[in-house]
Image (cartoon, rainbow, N blue to C red; front, side, top):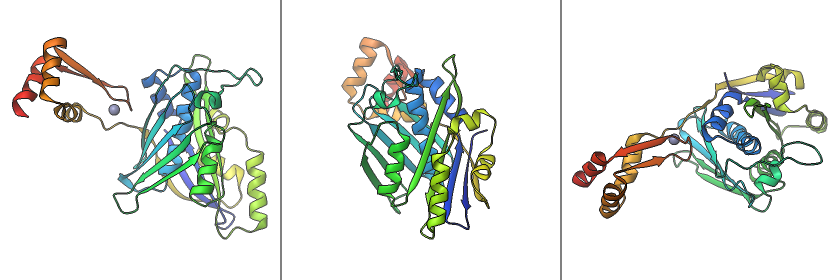
Length: 289
Ligand code: ZN
């Protein structure tokens, strides 16, 4: 089961978030039929979404991430709700590059680095917020570290990882963030830097079977776990919602779908579910609207 923990270490000077996202990333990759590099990019962004959603409460609070670096992947979009549900897509899921030198998935090339990372926070109008930063590398983790440091004014180290198996499926995925709190002293800062510099890939730790709690306590002393939350892939689209969208079209356009296509199909971007509307259902919309 995927979950996120929020913890404090070093007498509250260091804040730690650890999220295992293996199942929800695997679900997204399956739904969108992502090639390995697209899967890594979407999975890293979903894992970052788990970090951004960690400070939200309840299903009415939501954060949306949009990344577009001008590369062949196009836009990556992720929604995370305060109840631990996430959904997301990448515009071109077929994109796949291997870095010739490292033999690793070349996410930076697929995303591109000439563009922005945008975060839109929707807390039911109480404190809505949009933050945009220029992409640093397109590798996503560095871009989020820069976002948290600049936009939220909190020095942060971010590790995001997706391990793709030889058959193209997701073996493990997760996120780790280490943040310095205002009461951190020199010793806390150098200790956190040491941990961040010597970190194993987060996906490797989850592939080894470690839990988020075990990872936090392995990295720091005196870890105090504040909160645990389950994470799930979930999309709130439905046939009713798609019908509402159809009803906003011109009657002539609906008539055209009836006459020429004898029905229509609409696919949700976020979860790739296709909804079919038969001729008779479209005809019903012309009568009631
Ligand atoms: Zn959907």
